[in-house]
Length: 551
Image (cartoon, helix red, strand yellow):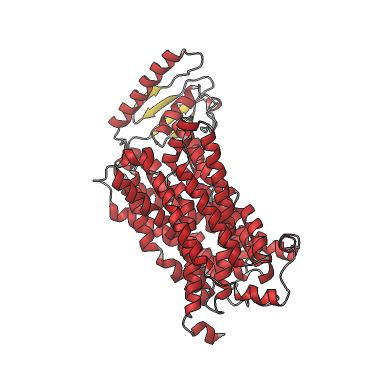
């Protein structure tokens, strides 16, 4: 075993890693185009809603792809354990690529009405199903080609693919945006990155067709030991099911929220809360990805020496302890005027709690008419953080900006023309007072501390690499070959699909409800904290496991 670990990588192993990784990069590229363009997609496909609800609903459509990932894991994992790794993830990439291409030619809401968001969500669901089968196949395939003592190093290349896919999507978006200009890009240019994916699909399929089947699967098939019922073996037998549950709550849930906070929520936070323009925010994230991505390989290789568990648990713990101060520092660096205004002139909403609704209207059917709801909706639309103070029952809401108090109003029973006039007056009054109090309408690029922003984002990416770099090897090592594809895929995709994929939507809903732009961080902090405790107490180290034993 020591000799295998010490020898250099063979040409065949390099080809396996390159082909698996490159195909997965393209697949993640397809998936993340949508997330990176959420704000534009909200306007194109959910324009029938108010701007706040449209953005949250666009995030929900993004999350829909994550929600179905576990079902893709079950469906394709079963096929992968019964028929083979190679052809299963060849099918997944075809499904993903074609779904993405169709988004690029899909008419918008203005053209075909409600059919547009419905078709979009169907395509997102197909993408999620495909990705559910993709990751487990690629990770299993590479791990089963890796020599003992090198699985962390080999599979860490797969772990870079999600980040590289995100980076590639940002790069294509940025290039298209710069070439066409902001107006043309928002109108029709956003489609180009989706259409380009057909070329990436062709390259990926060609590469994957040249691969041979995993040696572990070939050996198992030759011996007649393949599973006849991988779902029953994985989830119907307690000895395997308990490992699946532990892998979910003690590993992948925490890994997922750290991953999505560091790479997606940070991007949304800059564009939505800090009002950094989209092109600059994408550039900052892209720079941090370039600097941080090598750490996937560093921590993957290190996990072969000191173990997977201590690195993953350390990443979760550090995230829990540092997220609040780090995001506050990001505010100060990216939009110092906003940071100064929040410190000097706090915004306070004083209202009867019984008047205040949850600020989320995905269907566009709910009309916010109370003075509290109207006040909060105006502040949320301006991305202003505020504190809530309870007022006596029946008291109209007021917004206090610094020392200035502005009474809100109830729109119940108002004639449409009167309401339109009153709304315009109220919004102008709030906007003028916010401006007087130093609240900027957008981040001033001249005042942004670019180096500090990139340093903070790189720190967040390094936390991602700690939790994500070693996890493929660890999940592969937790399950026997005959049910590995199925067993490892489900906890990975429930963790990343549900806990991680719902993070932006949940976090922004928490912010909309509480008024504090940092409160969305409680979601990843609580989940990563739970994973740290459960993983530390109950997960066993796996780096020395023989993955062929017991098959």
